[in-house]
Image 1: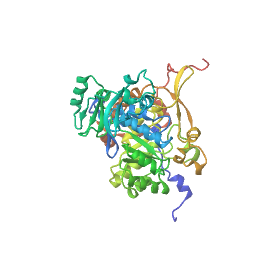
Image 2: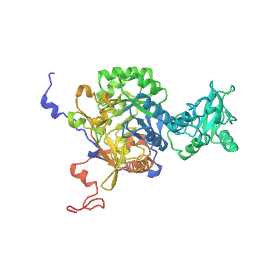
Image 3: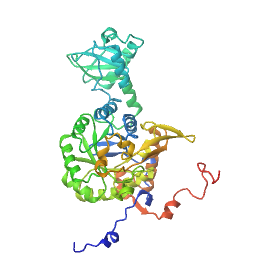
Image 4: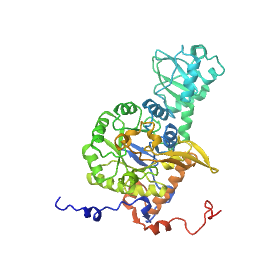
Amino acid sequence: MENFSFRGKLKNADIALTFHDVILSPGLAEVEPSEVDIRTRVSEHHPINIPFVSSPMDTVTEDQMAIALARQGGIGVIHRNCAVDEQVEMVKRVKRAEALIIRDVITVEPEQSIAEATELMKKHDISGLPVVEGGKLIGILTGRDVRFADPKLEVGALMTKQVVTAPEGVSIEEAKGVLHEHRIEKLPIVDAGGRLKGLITFKDILLRGEYPNAARDEEGKLLCAAAVSPFDLPRAKKLGEYIDMLVVDVSHFHNVRVFEAAKKILSEINADVIVGNIGTYKAAEDVITQLEGVAGLRVGVGSGSICTTAEMTKAGSPTLYAVTQVADALRNYGADIPIVADGGIRSPGDIAVALAAGASSAMMGNLFARCKEAPGALVSIGGRYYKQYRGMGSSSALAKRYSLDRYSIPSKGLPEGVEGWVPYKGEVSVVVQELAAGLRAAMGYAGAKNIRELWEKAKLVALTSVGAEEVKPHDILLPSERPAGT
């Protein structure tokens, strides 16, 4: 305390630059933007083909968003503001979406009613069900079988008993041949004893060809992540059976109680575990030295467009500043842990800056909330379409109570988020194409062929407030604007 000074708190204060404050300095371009490689890692063991991650918010990421984004090459983190069974079911839908061999097959038994079978088809959005008895395949029931049928009839009365099957180990090319030869859409996989072991569908084979850039696991299923409270080990265990990545989801991870809780999750879950949010060198240092098995870091505190943490509490770490802090800690300790930059990203240029500062990927809520696949409500306001978007610390999100511990509301006693509307942009594929094209162009300007090269080559220059305005379109009336008084 000898050199302590209250005046020093101001004199020695860091300057926490944000995306608004900097710009990439142009470098020597050696490749065209179309040749820039934007593949990356989102966690230690899972590469993705585009560095885009959708935020675990209940107006951003459920199964439809996770499926759509994974098909484009990124990954979605399914929110936790719901019952655990509901979250697990969303994860299952993602993993079943276009698996080459579906292992978690939805089945019926012969004594079940047609009404029950029809309900299962509707619930899981499937058009057929293998019929099993004692684990053995005895038939198949299709949508055509149940159409106009008496719902009180038993499945066994309408199922097709002569089922074309394939043995385990069948190749995809062989399966395609069987499907074509018999003009069928579903091919059950059985073992030597006739027990059902999986299912190959014509639809999933077609989808794999339609989305060659999709982010997939080793079995060919779409990658999927899910958020979990650090204090909810039972939920983490249930999700861990199906998920590729768990995201320990709390606004301020650098907390003694959170660290202790996270140790239990890390020791009992086999999936990659991403922790966060953190925003300082010290937080990263403590994660590196005190926690074993961390596969990724979610970085940034208080920068989200719907987050009021920094405004309400005057505490935070803007994402750009936070990423540089954490990236330096990782480099100094020789820790090869991917950084997910989370918060405040409004454009592909912001993504490029976040990556240049040391991130491996960017997590976005606002941009993906605008998409058709986001669960937020679509409304028309003044002749234009908008999607609902709310922070997980907003009053309405907290009313569901599952997200309370993310912001420690019982102890803090105040919300840390807002809700509103963002412009509707259409399908995820459209937004991803715009972001990817802009990111490749930005990296081309910086003279980088890939993300790792961007870390080393990119230079950031600070803008004055006047400069920040000058780099925008100016001194022109844009078509989207109206003169005053009109």
